[in-house]
Each structure stands twice: as structure tokens, then as C-alpha cells.
Image (cartoon, rainbow, N blue to C red; front, top):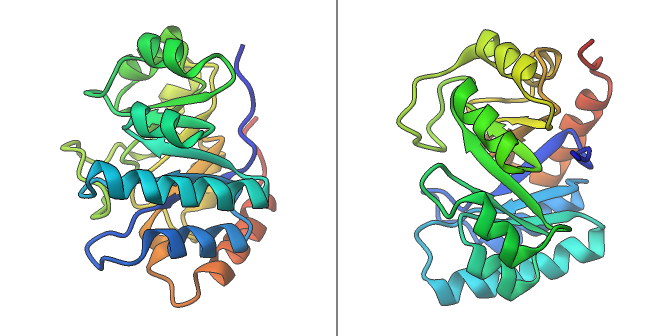
Length: 213
């Protein structure tokens, strides 16, 4: 049985090419009101990633936020994360679920309706879908999918959808209205001069957006 996401904003702490301190970035996202936080730091070694994940997990607990680790089931388990987000080439859902348990969140990145339906059927708690628009934050190898593709995926799955890829403060409402349950943002938040203030403003706008019929 699917469960609702705790927020319409899915914040991703990713230091990116600027090399920002990922824990400080997570702190600012949470201080602004983010209640779903994913740690994504692909260049990091296992030891550095684990240390950052432990710090982000503690910060998330203080703020009552769901904390997920990108790709790495081992790090998610070791730090006591609330879940993990998996890509198409990562560990399949079934073994991840056996290791992490039924209470943990497992999300899966998808890029077309077939992948989305397969992830939902395999037991994903939510699916990521995108890239919706062109983006430089995440290189998927897929062209932008657009809102019509999002609407088609919405008709094909019952689990929550987190839309990702090039979404910013101005485009988020249209993405929600097309069927997403939440929008993932990276550079739109992390590149802002005041990350916490930007998160607060985005949340206010998302909360005022009508839900899809």
C-alpha cells in the first residue's frame, strides 16, 4: 500500500561542481522547512559519505524530516537513514527491501512509463520521474520528458511521483498540476544566495498550488 509523501518539496543536498559543504547545505535546507531530504554526493568515498550521512541523519531527526541516501543501500543502513533512492542500475528493490525493511522508504528513478510501472509493481514507495525539463544538475542520458509524459505516467501508476529535472520556483506549480505529488529541486535551491529563505518561499508557493484532479 502506498503512503503519501510528507511534503510537496523534495530537497536534494548535492554539493555539485561548486564543492559546497554538503552538511551545511543540508542544514540550510532543513532550516528553511524541507521535510524530505536526500543526500547525493557521488564523488565522495565511502568514509566521507558515511560521515556526511550520519550528520545529515541527525539534522533530519531534529527537524522531523525524512532522510534518504542516494544509491547506497549500505550507507543508508549504516547511518540509520529513513530510506534510499535507487537508480535504474542500482541494487533492485527486492534485495534493498529485505535489507532495509518494510518501514523504510525506497524510491526509484524512472524515465518512461514502462520503468515507472515496473518500479511501482516491484514495491517502490515512490518513483522519481524525469528529467521534466533540461537540467545540468543531473546527467541521466535522457532527453527532457515534458509535462505530457508526466501526465501519462500519472495515469499509469498509483504510487507518489516526485518530478525532477530543471524544475524551479516558477515552473513547480505546473509540474504539480500535471500530476506530480512533489517536485525535486537541486540547483534552484542550492545555488540561491539564501538557501533557507528560498526553501521557505518555494514551500509557500507549493502549498498554494491546487492539487491535480
